[in-house]
Image 1 (cartoon, helix red, strand yellow):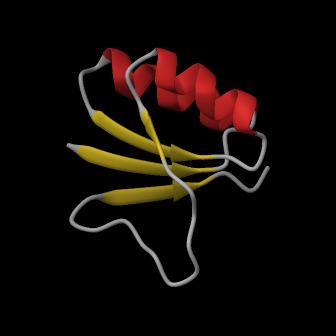
Image 2 (tube, rainbow, N blue to C red):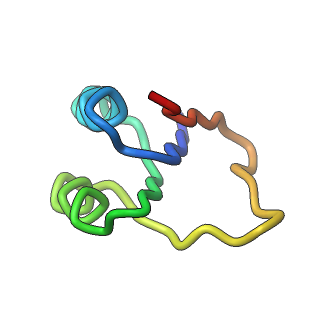
Length: 65
Protein backbone atom coordinates (compact mmCIF):
# COMPACT_ATOMS: atom_id res chain seq x y z
CA UNK A 1 0.00 0.00 0.00
CA UNK A 2 1.18 3.55 -0.68
CA UNK A 3 0.95 5.85 2.35
CA UNK A 4 1.77 9.54 2.81
CA UNK A 5 2.55 11.23 6.14
CA UNK A 6 2.57 14.97 6.71
CA UNK A 7 4.19 15.72 10.04
CA UNK A 8 6.63 13.39 11.76
CA UNK A 9 6.20 14.20 15.43
CA UNK A 10 6.76 11.50 18.01
CA UNK A 11 3.64 9.61 16.94
CA UNK A 12 4.16 10.07 13.19
CA UNK A 13 7.76 8.88 13.35
CA UNK A 14 6.81 5.69 15.19
CA UNK A 15 3.91 4.98 12.86
CA UNK A 16 6.11 5.63 9.82
CA UNK A 17 8.78 3.21 11.04
CA UNK A 18 6.15 0.50 11.57
CA UNK A 19 4.69 1.03 8.09
CA UNK A 20 8.14 0.75 6.50
CA UNK A 21 8.89 -2.41 8.50
CA UNK A 22 5.58 -3.87 7.28
CA UNK A 23 6.71 -3.30 3.67
CA UNK A 24 4.49 -0.35 2.69
CA UNK A 25 5.64 2.40 0.30
CA UNK A 26 5.88 5.57 2.36
CA UNK A 27 6.17 9.22 1.32
CA UNK A 28 6.81 11.69 4.13
CA UNK A 29 6.88 15.44 4.62
CA UNK A 30 8.05 17.24 7.72
CA UNK A 31 8.81 20.89 8.31
CA UNK A 32 12.02 19.86 10.12
CA UNK A 33 14.03 18.15 7.41
CA UNK A 34 16.17 16.08 9.79
CA UNK A 35 13.20 13.84 10.66
CA UNK A 36 12.38 13.37 6.98
CA UNK A 37 16.03 12.45 6.32
CA UNK A 38 15.85 9.84 9.08
CA UNK A 39 12.85 8.24 7.37
CA UNK A 40 14.68 8.33 4.02
CA UNK A 41 17.46 6.27 5.57
CA UNK A 42 14.76 3.66 6.28
CA UNK A 43 13.68 3.64 2.59
CA UNK A 44 10.87 6.21 2.79
CA UNK A 45 10.64 8.90 0.14
CA UNK A 46 10.47 12.53 1.21
CA UNK A 47 8.74 15.26 -0.72
CA UNK A 48 8.34 19.00 -0.62
CA UNK A 49 4.76 19.98 -0.02
CA UNK A 50 3.05 22.12 -2.64
CA UNK A 51 -0.26 23.86 -2.09
CA UNK A 52 -3.01 21.89 -3.72
CA UNK A 53 -1.01 18.67 -3.77
CA UNK A 54 -2.49 15.56 -2.29
CA UNK A 55 -1.79 11.91 -1.88
CA UNK A 56 -2.94 10.23 -5.09
CA UNK A 57 -4.31 6.73 -4.99
CA UNK A 58 -3.30 5.95 -1.41
CA UNK A 59 -4.04 7.24 2.03
CA UNK A 60 -2.70 10.20 3.97
CA UNK A 61 -2.21 10.86 7.67
CA UNK A 62 -1.54 14.23 9.26
CA UNK A 63 -0.22 14.15 12.82
CA UNK A 64 -1.50 17.28 14.53
CA UNK A 65 -0.26 16.40 18.03
